[in-house]
Length: 402
Ligand SMILES: *Cc1c(COP(=O)(O)O)cnc(C)c1O
Image (cartoon, rainbow, N blue to C red; front, top):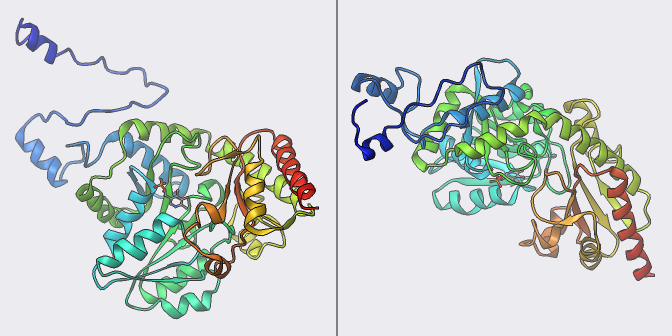
């Protein structure tokens, strides 16, 4: 007892009891600071001579627990690989870019790229002297033609939005390796349940945890997985920019991992059922789903993805262009009209009005996107109910058109 004073007592409450036996759920550590036993310990921790925590913006144990958990799923038992957690997917991607390219640097990225990443490369990093070539990643000759010894990063997405084109990861990895570039893969749409890009030669894998990993549309976060030496540079950017994952969000994201395989299994099975059923509907001109044999990258998906796992996103192209796409999306009932993906509910977005709204008709066509394309993130409802809602909406559209 250091004092009987009310104020001092209130500040110096007794320490929480040790959690023994081991709690089933992990601790959530909100503390911003850590009490050092001596100045020497403080110095050792700060210099990295001793492992431990100093200040919550640098690292926090709950964020690390989450990142290590994703690493265990993504890198299965390789001790040389770890993870670092961020407060969003974009923070993770930005930190990777800032760690490995800079003024005078060169990045090669897909034309069909997540909008936030496109904006980062085309606008922000361009202002800081980073040049990006946007290429069709399915055209390996085109990729090889722009990746050279000046290239810092070859960047790909396992599954592209909205065509669900599957990146040929081993081929892209060898193009990067030949030029001495880093190969970074955004695997948000795939998750480690479907594909593990590190096994195909990726140097780093990034995820938006906001999507399937969190899985319930209620938490934002990101993570980078890869070799510990590379990650240390990414972590340093995170420290400088202050984008570590908050403990509460880390707790939620780690909890999401327990049911990730269970949810993904259902997302994949329902998406395949919906895609297969809709190909024959008279209002549909095209169903984009890599699990269908007519998809342009079906063979790549078969080669790289776990058996019968093709993801939970399906894009439909309805006949009638923009007007038909909008009418379809607006008439869904079970399916919600909402942004984002990977949650429990099936959600739809008219592509040309949402994620690709900056593109005019010509640019949409160049990107291979029809005005009638609607992206669906298939949720965990009964697949029959999802299909019934979509089929009813399509039948109504057909009636209005005839
Ligand atoms: C959502 C998303 C991101 C960005 O993640 P945030 O958590 O929203 O910052 C990056 N890449 C892909 C493929 C995404 O779907």
